[in-house]
Length: 126
Length: 292
Image (cartoon, chains in turn cyan, yellow):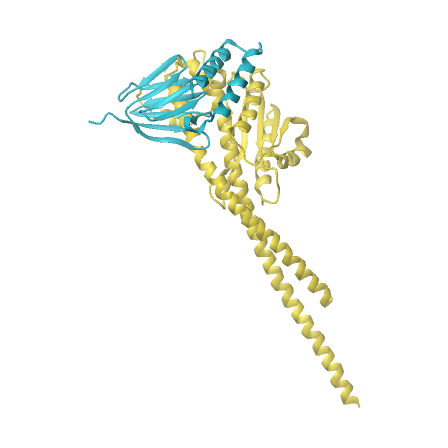
């Protein structure tokens, strides 16, 4: 019996990914979650991080909503990008911007938490 | 009876108008394809998001401190209307259809003694509304310089709406736009986005799925609902963009055809008067010869 399930990633302008895989690792708001086949129905949302699908596909995201039911994994995100599409310059710009916002003091704890993750994730990308 | 020269000039001018409308039609057709693609690509996202919210609301216990964005703040006094129109004219009844629908809603709201606030997006709609309801417009926005509308623009409007809601500036929010059905039909629509409107028939369709939530339901909803507002606005933008091009294409097609008819008619007129003048000259020559 196959251990694969269906995964769809949708952004407002297009369907970014659609296919089968046997596992998916998601940077959920309260920690990393790996979804395997026959996971119980789940709704959660994401913090900045890397989505890994199977072994080969990797995506960078800043936010998003995830629903898993009936062996269908649905990821809705407005800021999702395939890792291959991000170049070094873009990455450095994003880090700089995030650090600038972080250094200004008028942000809430939640925003700080999210921004810290964003910087950390971006620095890991090479 | 206009002179031959006048007729000639008119035919020429109608022909050049026809050339312009034809060109506009072609441009609209090309843009329509893209806009339609975008609208169709945008649909799954908003549908799925609504689905998730629907599933969430089913599991959330009735009435317990549910987020205000979902159930409303219990009041029904101040209405915020977001009217989305195009920035350009020459697209048939596109802009006026939205405005007509919006105005009929405005009238109803005011008649019921409720307060009205308007946000107008797109300059053409603003021009049409301001003459009658100018005092109610609290904010206007135009994305004229933007070539394509993306999530960022919709988010801008969405954030503004949510900000106003949090300041308790309004109780209910309606959004007006044209729904793209096909090239010929676009249906102007009014949709309620705050509090989130859930179709009744969907509510009855019980799906006995028990979800695990991480973090708690209300935290997810708090994150999701503002996003939903922006997404619904984006959807309206995309549908509108496709409708605008479709509407323009049909309007320009009609204009081209009308110009063609006019040219035919004028050409017949021109030929008749040319023949008449020839006949007249002949008669003059013949009668001159006869009298000799």
